[in-house]
Amino acid sequence: MTAQDFILESYNSTIEKGKVKWSSPSNIALVKYWGKRDQQIPQNPSISFTLSNCKTITEVTYVKKDSSDFSFDVIFEGVKNEAFKPKIETFFKRIEAYVPFLKDYHFTIDTSNTFPHSSGIASSASGMSALAMCLMSIEQELGAQYSEEFVIKKASFLARLGSGSACRSIEGELVVWGQNDSTDSSDLYGIKFDGDIHPNFKNYQDTILLVDKGEKQVSSTVGHKLMHGHPFADERFKQAHDNLAKLKSIFASGDLENFVKIVESEALTLHAMMMTSMPYFILMKPNTLEVINKIWAYRKANNSNVCFTLDAGANVHVLYPESEQDSVLEFIKNELSDYCQNQQYIVDFVGNGAEKLKIN
Ligand code: DP6
Image (tube, rainbow, N blue to C red; front, side, top):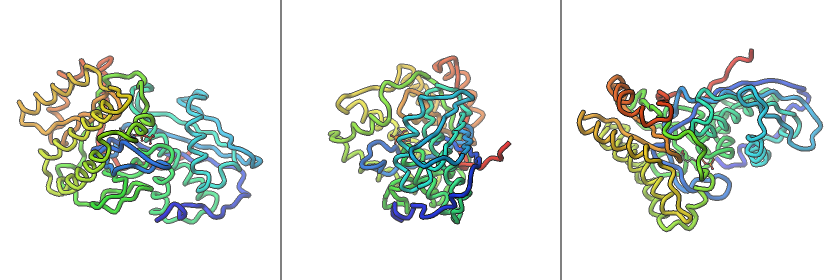
């Protein structure tokens, strides 16, 4: 498919108003997206587990107005919010060619997260995917006749234009984004991983340790840009393709030992790219390293398959198979929670993606 295929050609402009509501989860990348070109086109493929508990819930009300410019209000956790508006305005500008009614309506975007505010957890993936699903529902209320498959694809396509990683939150359990030889994925949208998945990877657990809840000094958007002209960029992009191919056979065979190696290497490579860009920066905190060392010691002592991954921040995602749930949660409570701000962590697991909600 090409971008042209996502243009809504005609719609029923006599509809005066309506309301739609979706929830959409966050996701955690195993092979990381870091570096992009043009309009949100990734420099390498990525794959992620979709999460369950870390979600954004968004209700969009639309009311007909004169078509002149974008008009919308954002309400975040019950309070009118100006800070999110520029990002949404940029999103609307990028998607207007595909969603041509955006200037015909005033939108009230009422949104909240299930995870604590300023937890250092990126809400852009869940937020942009929830908004993209709301826009797809509005397209359908305005008369678009789409297959379910097309709705999911276009939602992922739109979400990508809001925030790259958001395109991997529409579906579960594993989603691939970015052209590669191992899957049928595209640079334009994420697809559900269609390879075999061994029972070892079913219901995989992710406990997110809130090591640092403050705002990051360097945003992902800036970090992606620093991959342009980065001395190790080409090798890194090649490595992501190789790691995705390896993960594909690991998912089929259930090889947890090699899963751990690839996932941890991806996390450290992501941060190595940050430390070797110009300007360089470090997003890990001392407690991030303390936690990593504790995980390594626990894994060795207990013959465990627990491992870590990191996003563009200091928080640690602790990943483990469902079979180790009780023991690893005990370990987290007893040995890792002290490294978290206010001892806070979020217990999550792999989920199935966005869900349409009833309007109250
Ligand atoms: C480190 O999707 O947040 O989490 O496209 O600029 O919004 P933008 O970036 P974003 O980057 C996420 C980077 C990452 C890795 C990943 O999720 O693949």
